[in-house]
Length: 134
Image (cartoon, rainbow, N blue to C red; front, top):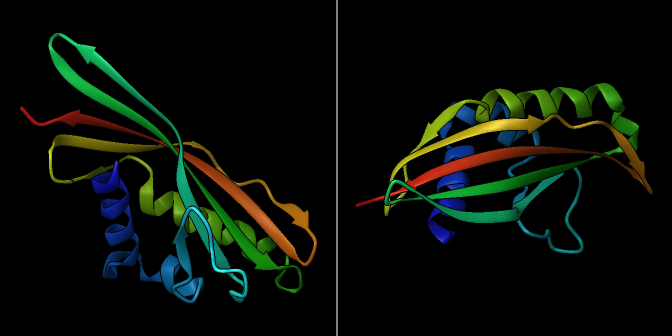
């Protein structure tokens, strides 16, 4: 699972994704953000992980959630635009990670804005399917 999370971290920080990553000021964290982190920010993590075997091949399925937080003063349009950038960045993409022959990530749901104290949050879920190396 660490290889999967490392691959996602590298992918979202590379030059192809600077619009989303820089729009959050580079504040993208695995599982939780430090308590005093300024907004906007994103937190992502694995919320479900299953291992299946099909015709002798191990296949892993991960559900990964990205929750983005924007200051309520920035407005819903900004939160939705950021969720759309994340969707464009990750949906229907192939990834590579050590120990896996093939990895595909697809969107399961897009963020719907919700008000949380001083922030607007959006949570998007992606399904990542990985075929283990032989």
